[in-house]
Image 1 (cartoon, one colour):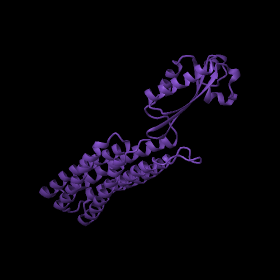
Image 2 (cartoon, helix red, strand yellow):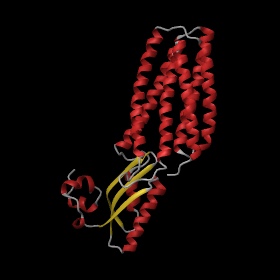
Image 3 (cartoon, one colour):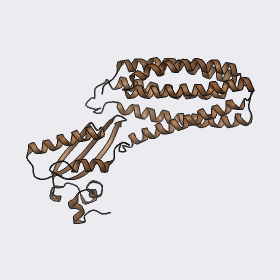
Image 4 (cartoon, rainbow, N blue to C red):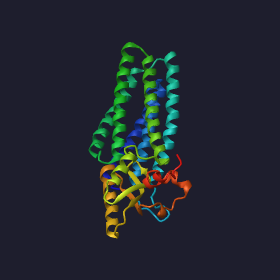
Length: 312
């Protein structure tokens, strides 16, 4: 995996500045009674965790795999992110609950103070968004860029709300803004938690259709059937596949050519870098699967289907 030292450095600076803004917003929120500031502050806490994971992931990707950790430590990032987003879901639900209470029982909020604090945050987010926008070829940097862009847009909304409260005295606006931030937290955390769950449960990557993969493999020269196909992800950007290809009787050189072509097609069309191919002759007599295993491994084998050996 290619790691950008510049991206890691920018993310580290982003973490420091985000932590500073987080403290300012949380303290100011409780001092002024602004639920919008408090909600945005906890939103920043979630962003801080995400940035830390992105930075840690970049650092971990520099470490080579070992004999006992043949895949390296990439999955640790997924486990931590999944756990953090579950906790963030709870924070979002709590914020929405508090927003509902505050809407029906609004309290006076110092709109000018909220405006000033939010404006400082907006300036910082704008600078970080611009800097990380130059590093978006790196997925971790792109993720951080999207977070800061979202924070900047949320700050604009809070600035508008602060101005409305200052000039009109409509303090219920603060509760509405706080609730909206809570909903955004819930939506974002749920999406990221589900993405982590898909990887941990070894689902097929979302951008890959197994049926299309089978069609591409069957189209290869000398391939007559595709069986035992498994596709999964180690991280959002590292995808793996193993497959058995039934071939006509071929020479060793022809078999190696089939493997090379299969790997090339999977990389170019599906972005799967790690492809393991096992060649077999197209005959049930050479199949090592038991009758019980046939349902999960041999469904796409034409010979098995013709003999009616697969139990539906």
